Length: 314
Ligand SMILES: Nc1ncnc2c1ncn2[C@@H]1O[C@H](COP(=O)(O)OP(=O)(O)OP(=O)(O)O)[C@@H](O)[C@H]1O
Image (cartoon, rainbow, N blue to C red; front, side, top):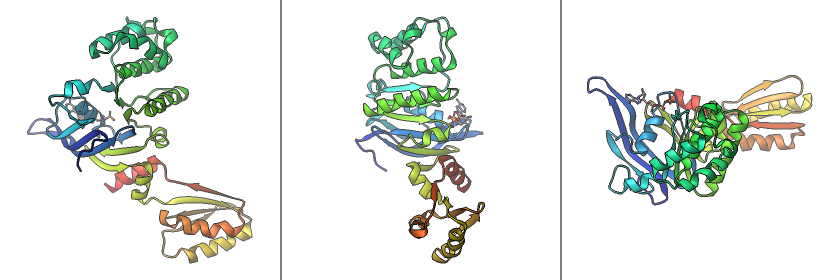
């Protein structure tokens, strides 16, 4: 893999070892990864898989034991990184906030730390829906309001790369929806975002691509559809038709698709469930199309199904 000018993030052979020489702990182990500019990229993996470690390495907060990282072409930790670091926004998993400061004072404090203009604070609070709470003390903020404030903090300095570590944990469904609407707007502005989450259903419809980490290694990389294809998990097709048509299909499908890992299951008089390998999708649909069905539902494996399947196989 070689770095490309269209990459917002590029990691090659990145290893991070914690612990002592006697009891080493490989938090990341030879990670190769590329995130093209403008993508919403997911990072998934079990607790301790190495997601936060990867973020901290990209930010230059910790140094790799070996390997190299580039942000928008600039070597992390290299000569020009101080400037490049300003183009990265980070929402940590547990952002520490000072309860006695107001939302606005909090943001002004972070703006000073980051060297971002103070004039961005009020518009950013409005952007995340905290305009009317800007002068209230953070101690009075709900979990969702704290997360919004943390997000506003990450947006200071108009970053080109946003690192979001489990940003929706503890948010209610409407706050999650608002949050992703914000990400869509940022994507439209060309911002690259890397988001870690354990809520796979939430990521599935929204990300362009993802990396699945396991014990510090990249177990899979690509779009959700790429991972579905790689996992080889079957498709489920639920067919509704009059009983005599289902009887005929139950006979003809195994003959037309022999030797496959095909499973047929009658679900009451008018429903037939077909599980088949992905490569049989089109031949199966060709068989079903003229069969006079009432209805047909195709269920793709979810990201969660694929995650467990690939994890077991690794
Ligand atoms: N400062 C540290 N010193 C020693 N070990 C560490 C340190 N930070 C992380 N680790 C270890 O590195 C591994 C990866 O941790 P990391 O926090 O990156 O995982 P994660 O994928 O973010 O987990 P989670 O989903 O629970 O947030 C874990 O085994 C963790 O215990």
